[in-house]
Amino acid sequence: MYTMVPEFRPPIVLEAHFYRGVAEPELAALGHPMVQVYCRCPVDLAWQRYQQRRGDPERHPGHLPEHQDETATLRWRTTEPLPLDLEAPLIEVDTSAEVDVIAVAAQIVGFATPA
Image (cartoon, rainbow, N blue to C red; front, top):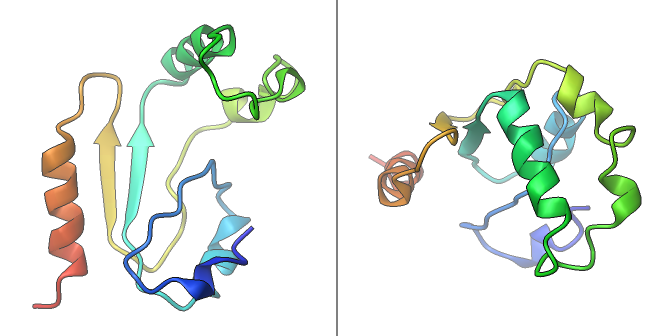
């Protein structure tokens, strides 16, 4: 999954549904300083949004229907969502309402800029 990362110099952004307890060693092995931005909202709201996007004809065709049904999504819908366990600054963003993206970006830059 991370094969292209060494080709880039920081800063880079990795975006995915990372699984706690699985992704941490892989991310640490990249050897780059990190800032984790963890998007939080109630699971029932996330599921509602997910279902709405599933039927959107504008959605990228790479989102396969077999990866979007109730069986395939059961793990994330029934597990307490938590940020990754990383040795990195953590910014938690409540996405149940509108997000001030400029403020989040400023926080990231604040952590990423040496003092």
